[in-house]
Image (cartoon, rainbow, N blue to C red; front, side, top):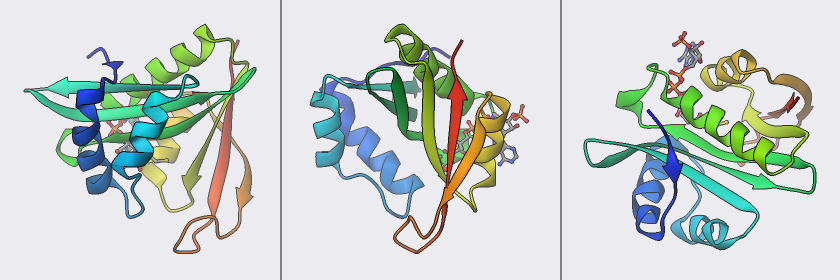
Length: 144
Ligand SMILES: CC(C)(COP(=O)(O)OP(=O)(O)OC[C@H]1O[C@@H](n2cnc3c(N)ncnc32)[C@H](O)[C@@H]1OP(=O)(O)O)[C@@H](O)C(=O)NCCC(=O)NCCS
C-alpha cells in the first residue's frame, strides 16, 4: 500500500473522489492549480485500476500544511488514510518542514482520531470557518 505522486491524468479521478467525500469539494481547476504549483505535493493510492485515496500537502519555508486527504468510503478503516498521511509527513520532512498543520471540522471525529494517532495535537479553533458555519480545529505535528 504505497502511495505514488499525482500525474495530470489522475486529476479527473481525484476530483470525482473529492466530490464524493466533501460537501465543499475542491474543483478540478483548484486541483490542477495545486498540481502545477512547485510547492504542492499530491499522492494517491490506486487499487483495482481506480483511485481509492489521495492527499496533498503544501510546503512553506519550514512549515507545511496538509490541504487534502480522503479515502473512498468503501475502502475506509483499513489503514489507507494512515498510509497517505504518513507519506505526506515523509514528503514534509524531506523538504525541510519542522512542523505540519492541518484543519479539520469539529464534527469529523474519524479524521481527528487518525490525526491524534499520528502525533498531531489540537492548537485552537477557527470559529465558523466552513461554509455551513462549522468551526475548524487547527492541529499541528512537530517533526523531529
Ligand atoms: C478520515 C479518513 C481519511 C480516514 O481514512 P481511513 O482509511 O478510514 O483511516 P485508517 O483506516 O488509516 O484509520 C487509521 C486510524 O484512524 C482512526 N479512525 C479512522 N476512521 C475512524 C472512525 N470512523 N472511527 C473511529 N476511528 C477511526 C482509527 O484509530 C484507525 O485505526 P484502526 O482502524 O486501527 O482503529 C476517512 O474517514 C475519510 O476519507 N473521510 C472523509 C474525508 C475526510 O474527512 N477527510 C479529512 C478531512 S480533514
